[in-house]
Image (cartoon, rainbow, N blue to C red):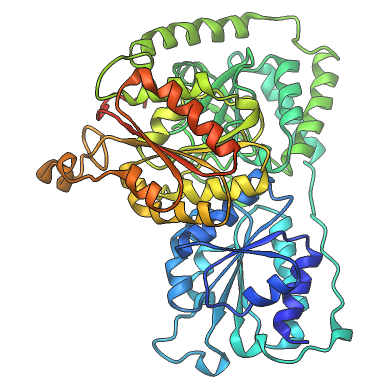
Length: 546
């Protein structure tokens, strides 16, 4: 058999279900012959985004794999890989290569060298005999340590070389996990119990470790108020009495209040990186950080104490140690923190209710968020924002109640990222309603891949909030939008979606949002992608507290 076939058989042994791809790549035909579904997208970046969304929803238990052409293909995919790297998403990227005789010859694009800075590990299969070894290394990197994209380049001449079937000896590598040092665990709990106003800060490491039950048990044991980062949103149920919501570029008043009042921040599964994914930590706080990557420690903040290890294993240790130091019931009898949280949430929602239930025309975007909350069942929905306004409007108010019911992202924060993410999420969880919320600028980046959803029969619901400005921030309105008044040339996105074979509906009055959502959901449940274009005003007010 050929080496390309050997690689396809290894992917099959690894349980790979589909290959998101853009031709020309030497693996597309071999994987199809092995029963792995090729999913062709319109753009290479979306190819990567699909794999990304799949890995997120499965928390890396099933790995998204993508492939594209050498040179122009992997060059176009660069942004998608950079986003996955910034958000620590485990995906396998398999670009082609023109052949080994072209190595080092200008203007040949060296994918391994050029993407080394945005991948966890990058290599090229330089010999057919090394294919199993390099795939084993790739999946070891994907399953162990800090999640991140891995790149393995497949030269066309290597893929066409003969590979002896007897030499295909491959077993999928297991994930390697480490627990925390017992002494570090004891000290962390001692410091936490000594604090007067502790705050539990949960990142997406809790999701990848599937440690949401342990997180909830730990918070309830010690009656800790819990905020998540944007990436960690949904790791803790936001309808829980101790939930403050998610903190990011925008946030809730409860997050702001408790963060300012806290004397100790206890971070678990978080890099404590400040850039859209988490709020800035005010000065004067004691910080305890639990992470599996030593590069996170003392990065943006000086950390007073650290625990290294997998979030699930560390949380189990913390629970046992807390019971040892504070008693089997801990602080379960106290309700003061929950009452404080409830009071702040009540006041905050009252402040924002005029916008959330606004009857303005054009429609206030917060009214769209409100209608989504009323129309969707969060336990049966996966929803994701796009970059910019939709992120900052949706994240604080949409209540995520189940793990990965909300996909928060943004270390790179690329416009148009949400569509591919939704496609991958639907492939991972076909029983869920998958919704991506984006603006007119975001749709301009990814809109043609709505046709991918139609052609590949991946029924997602796209909610396009069109404010005709390609932006909306008061201090950062794009010059072109202000100068040329885009509302006169913005176009009709429903016609685009219909032309690409999907269902589309335009909504211009707030009273019609609920009905449109009901109709779109029915269409999606019937197996067809749908797009709702909702004409909104440019809302300048965002729940910023920093």
